[in-house]
Structures are given as C-alpha cells and as structure tokens.
Amino acid sequence: MDRLWPRGVAKTTAQLEDWNKAITPTTELRRWFDHEPAKFPTFKTRYLAEIADNPAWPAFEQQIRQQLAVGNVTLVYAAKDPEYNHVVILLALLKKALDS
Image 1 (cartoon, rainbow, N blue to C red):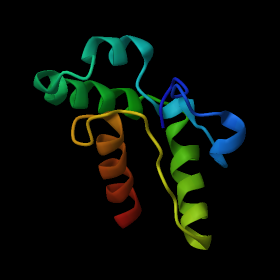
Image 2: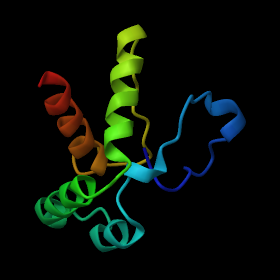
Image 3: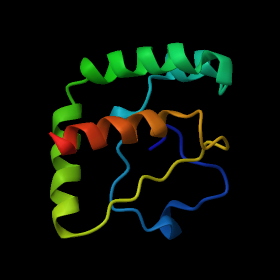
C-alpha cells in the first residue's frame, strides 16, 4: 500500500496479487508528512481529501469487496510506525465503507 516499493523486498518473491499505488498519498503529501507523528492529524485530513477526489477509489473499494467475498485481504506497507501511517487511515476508511 505504498507508492514506493520497500527496499530489500524482491517483487518476484513478495507474492502480491496487486500493488495499487493509485490510492496511496501523493508524493507531495508523503514528503510533507515525513512520518512525523505531530503532523498526523493534518496528514489524515489531507489524505482523506485526496481519497475523496481520487477517481481510483471506487474501483479499489469494489476490488476489496470482491476479494473479501472469497478470502482474506492483507494490506502490506513498509512504514516503521504502526500507528502513524496512511494504511491506518485507509483501513479505517475501508472498514467504514464495507460496513455501510
């Protein structure tokens, strides 16, 4: 779930079905955030705005629904901080969308 492929992980051995860079934060937002926890509330607001304006979101949400109908979905990310990263936001948004 990252725009950049994580260092040290070979794409051939990762065994991922999809790498959807289109719904990750923009490069500008990612660089601004720079994994600084103090910036997380503003980062969250800006990222949610990006997703709301992202034409790739509906297809991504549908893809997740389809995959969940046949099995588990795992969101893989490279951020070191498990609390302050975009996947936390994305997961909460997906859960909300899937519950509705």
